Length: 361
Ligand code: SF4
View 1 (cartoon, rainbow, N blue to C red):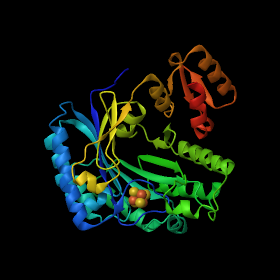
View 2: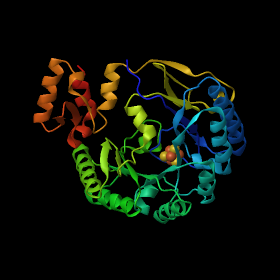
View 3: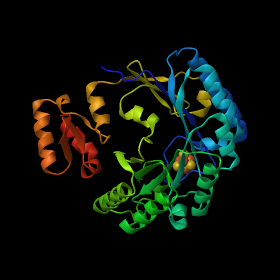
View 4: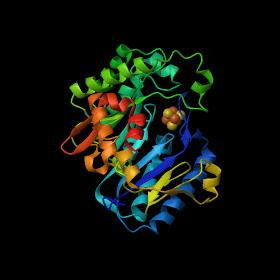
């Protein structure tokens, strides 16, 4: 088992949203001021408690949700608690997710707190598609939010876009990609919509005019090509970045490096053990212990996660039979083999689960 760098990633979950989006299965509850206050106190308590147990430096912090911008000015004491409890590496990447509806004063507070990367959930470049997703923002809110963040001096911004939306086509996906690029983000995450159980979309799934697999593939490949042509490197199945603007925190997940996750539904991987906090705000406030989730970091897992990256994994990670299968996949255009490494092509990324499963047989 091999652990890579010394720096630990720290994930902090803010499980509140103003309104639930129709596709979302992340753990979050409707914002309520009194519960939020209790939660915030419990979160700071956990940050301090874990900080007392971990001595290695933290080189990435990612505050996700939910909608972390509901913290408003509390982002300052939150990050102060992190700094006072953990040894934060100089130049640590500190990301906060926010929605385009966030009050622009949040960006000022985040800047003051030392946040140096924002991830903004833009999702689409058309008000009709945003409404269909149950988003509460408009296209002009997205433009306003990105401009407000730039005005505060944020020079590392990631924007999300969703593909395969109801009634979408290659043209609408490219329209959304063009809109995202017009905002000049340093990083773009492009996710294919998946209808998850326990979402509003799941209940409506029979009525949604969703693209089929072939149409979805065409949208994905068209957007990948479009973003590459605009200078974004396709470094992970759903992620694109300008040079040196990859998400350092998320790279830890795919490189099987270690991270600590705090908050309900947050997962951790430390010293070969995986554990998570249950999806229950009240239990977290009451001080519940994280649940052990087995061991991790074995070779198979490293291959599975490493193949999500365009850098792939070394060919000699595989036995003779798997190498033979990799060569077959290369003939089918699903895998690249070069410089002693195996990686997925964009066509292969579309069927990554089955290709990876076959390679791991
Ligand atoms: S997508 Fe984001 S804003 Fe929408 S419900 Fe999920 S966590 Fe909240």
